[in-house]
Image (tube, rainbow, N blue to C red; front, side, top):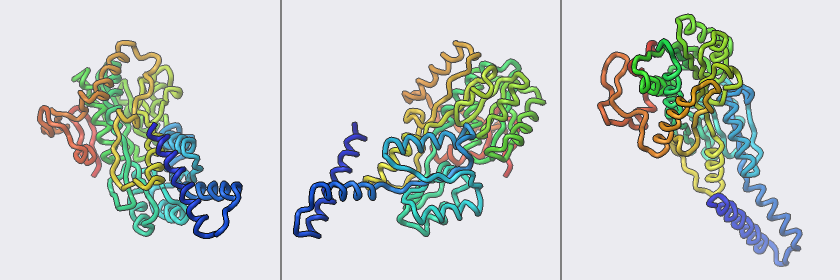
Length: 375
């Protein structure tokens, strides 16, 4: 209802503005048809020009696919046709793309961590353009960041994985050694250990977001070590497909990847960016937008878990749903002590919760993870 009322209010303000302008510039009353046309034109001009920059393509079935689904929801609800630019690598070329888009857009969403510095540079030169950066941490008066608490979903998937393993050895193909990936792996491990304290998780890095060949090789290196559950943080399903070839349980990322390995699929964290994109663009339209660092929760619907696979037992599904309810009602916090790191150091005492700043600055692994974090 609030969304509807905001839209009606915005339309009425535009109509009043158009009528007022007509009165001050002409001493005669314009025909009704002319007034209607003027109002329509004014309304059209008020719609912001929106652009999205993607690290991959919507067809990746993962990260970019879910951002594109969010864009489509925004377009449908707000009547805006956005510009999309796909397959833009992180680096110097990204800055050129953002600079070009800033010349003809009012709102620009950059959907990959490595776009951070290019967006900071371009935002400084275009103070009237609103920039929104996914997963970053640098802000400015016209540059905000947005991310979701995917670690909540990862914990739940970890619980399911912990119930499915037979030999207590699991693997995880990390993308890049950045806090976003590190704390997600930590949450996955804590979830698994909550139902099976003997579990360990071996981590290797692909240093890719979407490179199926490289990611499959990284997955195979873990499968060769004998892991019987394999998770991954990349946008492609290469890892769970490699796991399926060995008849090993697989866990994807970003979007429901069950169709790629239906017989051996457990689940994976899943994004839902649509509500955020709708809310953000509307706030620009009604003049209430301010740069901030959005960190949405599962309760807000920005993150969830994909449906558990068809071969996951009913009791495991029930266990996960029970814990999900605790996360949603606020009675359970994933990163609440005691939390011990892989070197045996107590990072957080019993009952102490990690702050958002501490979560977003995570550069260490929890106990039970085998692997190093490159510096």
